[in-house]
Length: 420
Ligand code: NAD
Image 1: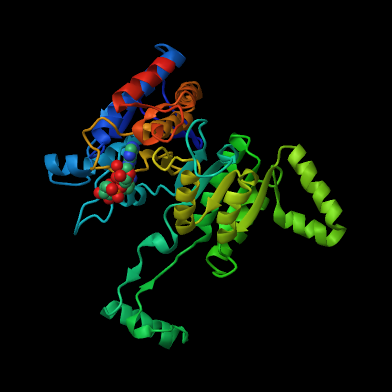
Image 2: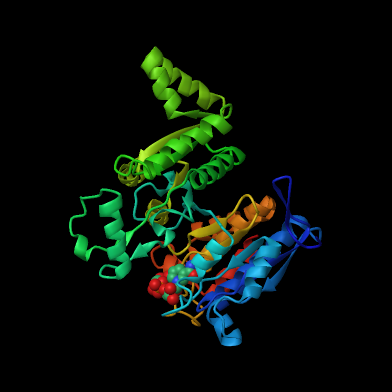
């Protein structure tokens, strides 16, 4: 297993010299990928000298793959990610018309990467649309394989949509479709297993990183069996699998009923004192309001696919970081994880040496943390903090900073290397 990360007894093992397959990415990918690799290599070398090293191995996807091989996502690329477990990718052009709908979706589905992890924090100096961005420190676990995003839908007017409606009406006794003749239909599968593995990962993450709470975000008040199921099964995971390490709002409510509110509050306080993770839930619309009003009350967020999509972008925007938000798609059972730039290929600025490399760079930080190479990860985060605080950033951020100094992509990369 030389140079390959592997799973042993349910735990990821990363050798000191590890091969990481990477997709350079289309458009601005060619600019951000080399800059990030240079910074990561330097941070690893600073942190560990010669004892640890990443061997970068390019694999093809997107336009570059199509031009060289005729395939948008060659099987060999999938094989490499399957074999080496951990990979990283720049943004990819979405092919227009026919074939693969989205390369990102294809990668997630093929490797069953069921967690989309988006940590959201604010960097001092970065201009934000909210008054107290320092209060935002959340870690979103978005379910990545189910929900209304599963791709099971039929267009209005097709024979399939009509057949589906007939099935609803004749076999399932559904009579409340308002405009049946012109309706498209979509199916929203939410399973016990799919929910439990996501919530389990979120609780384990909170425990590992000593975070205070996990909030289940759902619309179970309206969609009782799907989103309501998510909430119910989420609490079950906490109580059945992490009973000694968590305190749930279900337990709080039961205590309140049997022994009164003061006793329930005292139990909650005691659980917090003991460092237990508090498991609570919030209706998605109220949650979006609360993130603006009382962001400090949330830490880890576990939510379904569609809610997670909205929540990730809102929270990223709140820290002024839609262009610097990192992300990863992970399967904690198999160990497979692909870290990614969350923005697109930015064709309007490609080749101009002005793109901000921070989304891919912070995703690289997440990758180092996933590998357990925290010292190298911390060096990069500290360097970014210093650069932003002194107003040094690429133009997209620097232009809004009172003390902003716009640097090119290359200059910014060199600055970070010098600050490591
Ligand atoms: P985009 O994210 O590429 O660009 C939107 C705007 O943000 C543009 O003005 C761009 O210049 C700017 N921008 C994006 N990233 C930036 C960065 N790092 N630094 C500075 N400015 C940045 O979105 P789009 O234009 O809608 O999509 C372009 C292509 O990218 C499409 O083919 C789309 O399908 C694809 N895409 C891929 C991914 C992915 O691979 N994860 C995500 C979104 C879009």
